[in-house]
Length: 153
Image (cartoon, helix red, strand yellow):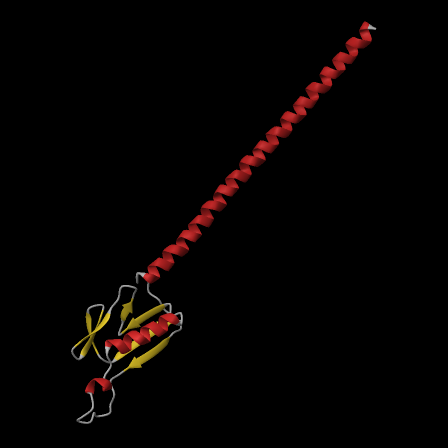
């Protein structure tokens, strides 16, 4: 009886050792797979963050006029009237003013214009257009009253 019990105990120990070795090998494989997937995830996050960051930088450069824009767009020319005013008429009604230009600029923005320039002066969020005698100041640059607007929509 002792011999049978000894054999049974030895067999159980052998089975346990084999099982432990098998589980250890599986654990190593799973840990290696986990490490590989963690590295892959980190790389994907880095690439995703970089591309999102690059897109945001590009968008901000466009708004700040730090990048040249080209492509489809429209051109609008605003010019003083060629009609000679009558002696009693208000001559201001026949010329372009900053108010007229601002109305057109606001309409273009409302229509979704991505970039606007007036007489080759880029219009930004901080740009201003105002009258100064017979000229219009765009970004404090003196321009004649004939305004040529370029925009891409």
